[in-house]
Image 1 (cartoon, rainbow, N blue to C red):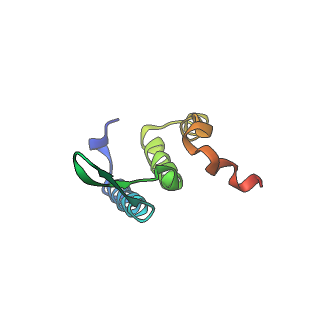
Image 2 (cartoon, rainbow, N blue to C red):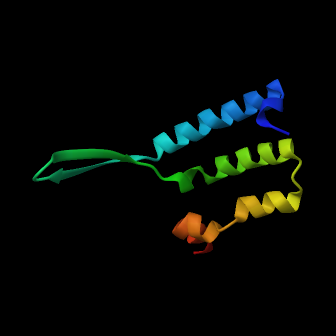
Image 3 (cartoon, rainbow, N blue to C red):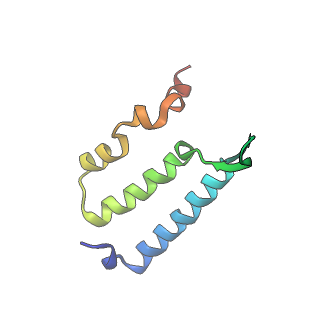
Length: 95
């Protein structure tokens, strides 16, 4: 099954999640400014994707349903290398 076969409802759900993740990334971003003697001021926007993990999981669930993944396959996708991707955020609930 390809993405072109998504129903209108599935497309709308993914579009809604897409807007939600963009808003989340934007709201959890920070502007970092550095001054370089040779080049001047550099200002970059730094994003924290781990803050969007719950939304990413929702997107994974929608796509898993579309592609017919089993619960075990979805669990693998959602939890793959989570300790590396989430870092200290994963341990916050254990303290």
